[in-house]
Image 1 (spheres, rainbow, N blue to C red):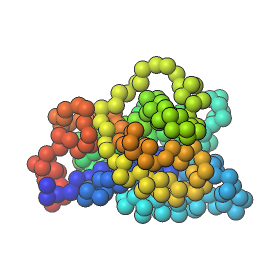
Image 2: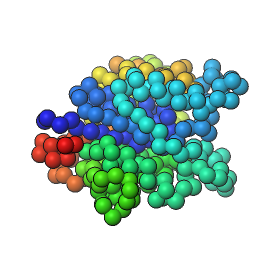
Image 3: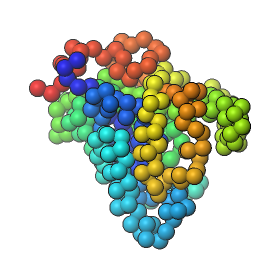
Length: 295
Ligand SMILES: [Zn+2]
C-alpha cells in the first residue's frame, strides 16, 4: 500500500491511551501506521493515585503536570496526540452528586462532538478506537467519549452535518476497547496462582457480575512484543499510576504467554471483514486507502 493507514484513538483523559490499546498503537506505529490520540479533557479533576506523587505542589499544578505526563507518554508510544479542550467532569462519589458546571459530560452532544468531527476530517482516520456505551467503567467522561465518537463516526462524512468543520471524511471501522474482560483476568489469575505468584485479581473477579459480556470480542490484535512500551507509557503518567500497584503485578512474560493480544469489539464497519479478526485494518484494501488518501 502506498498511502499510509491511519488510526485514531479517542480518549477521555491523559493516561487512558496508555491503559487501553497502548500496545496495539505501538505495534501499528512500528508498522508504519499514522496514529493520532485525541484526548477530550485535560484530566484536571483526576485524583492522584500514586502515593509517592500525592504532594501539595503537584496537586496545585495538576493540569500542567498531566500535560507533561501526556507529552512523555506520547513520545514513548510514538503517536501523535492532541487535546480537544474540554474540562474533566471528575468521578462523582455517587449518582446523586451533581457534575461540575461546564464540564465535558454536561456539554450538549453537538458541542462535545464538534472538535472531534473536525479532527476526524483533518486527520482522516480509516479506523477509530473508543469505549463502549457503558464507558468501559462508569466515569461520565468515558460514557460521553463513546457518544462523541459514535457521533463523529456517523457525522464526519456527511457534508450537511457540522458545516465549517472541514471537508467530509468517512472512517471505515469503529471499535470498542474490550481489554477489561472477566475471562482475561480469570486466565491471568489462574496462571499466576499456578506459578505461586500472588494474584491481586481474586476479589475483583468474584465481584464481577455473572452475565454475558454485552459486546463480544470480535478482534484480537497480537501485540505482546509491545507490552514493555505500554508499561513505560503508563508509568509516564506518574500521578495516575502507582509503579507498585495493580497494573504491574502480573509478569509481562506470563501475559505474553497467556494473553498476548489486546481485544476489541467491531461496532461499525463499512467494509467487508471476516470475524474473528486479528488486524484492525482487515477488509480495508489498497484502493480504499489510496482513494481515501490526501491528494
Ligand atoms: Zn479516564
